[in-house]
Length: 433
Ligand SMILES: C[S@@+](CC[C@H](N)C(=O)[O-])C[C@H]1O[C@@H](n2cnc3c(N)ncnc32)[C@H](O)[C@@H]1O
Image 1 (cartoon, rainbow, N blue to C red):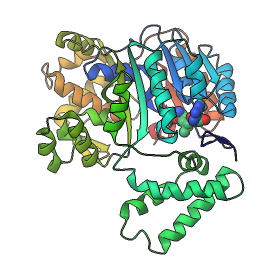
Image 2 (image 1 turned 180 degrees about the horizontal axis):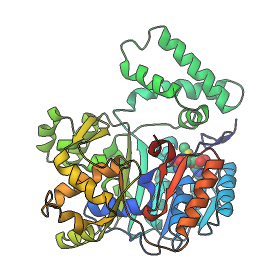
Image 3 (image 1 turned 180 degrees about the vertical axis):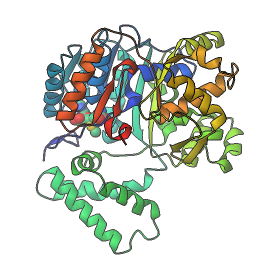
Image 4 (image 1 turned 30 degrees about the horizontal axis):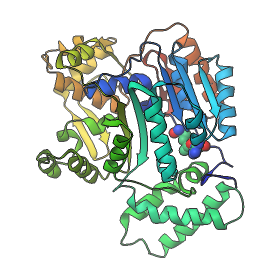
């Protein structure tokens, strides 16, 4: 097995797509949070640190031909696959740089509107985290956005002993990483069968979830040396020390009104908590959050109320293939099912099923009567569940490149369809279910 700064590199990381990493989504959500964000409809630049085989960059580059994309990764095989896909699909506006973060940070003199980093932060050593934040802060343009994904307390706390066992297996067992992780899982399952986790239901639950994942995925997640969940507030403070301000979450569930996103018995207490850091921590506790997709901004500029409403009125939204045609709609959220009432969702879905609509058009529906807050909650619930999406820029050739990339993904065991007009992708298994 090859170790690279405590990270494994002898097995490929499976392809995962995250709608929350795409520029249209990031700009829209930052706008919903009241911040002026880079315009994903114009020429912009985006860098992904730890891009793996480039799935998220390839989708973005196919859908934004006027923008420039850079992916950085030290796994040469991941980059070979990413470059092959770009070439096969005629995607020329993405560059994959074979480098570790420290070397990239030292040499980089480009600036970016967006920097994204998923599946990396919680797996690297503390000094490298500081390098990563410093690099993001220096390389972002004023107003630029950092998307940072990480594992957090309290939901991931009880994964720590399981990860520790798997990491020791990585160091002391022979063979490739996939074999080590499979042997390590057998050992953990034996321990569970002996009743050791009987009074630790969270550990037993984590282990059952892990058993459903592919060995390559488990190897990347758990064999590494530095795996460590954190309290979200500590990550926010570290980012602030580097000059990056926490805006909110790219996972819109977390930004919903507490009446929808916090269990009922905690709403009042959190509502009364004035200190933002304490409130954020209580929310993580109430939601048993295990990972976060946070948004940070360099030199944030809060939108005036007029600019906020103007941006929402101008934005266009459309339904995605799985959307129902009427309410009520049941949303699966991390705190359980939330039912979106028929009175709100039937008129909204009926309007959107006739075609894309601007925020201004949706605000005219009698059910909203200009109520911006109610429209935002409903749209974010639909976006969260991949039922609706903001529209992307219109650019020549995106549909063709999108089809070509969907076909390439299909030939490479990745069931993703590009929705070029929304500058995103939709999981084939989801929308054909
Ligand atoms: C779990 S994968 C995530 C890939 C992609 N971001 C995603 O979410 O699908 C982490 C990636 O970060 C890369 N990586 C980890 N540490 C790195 C470092 N110090 N420098 C460059 N790349 C690194 C790994 O090679 C791997 O491709």
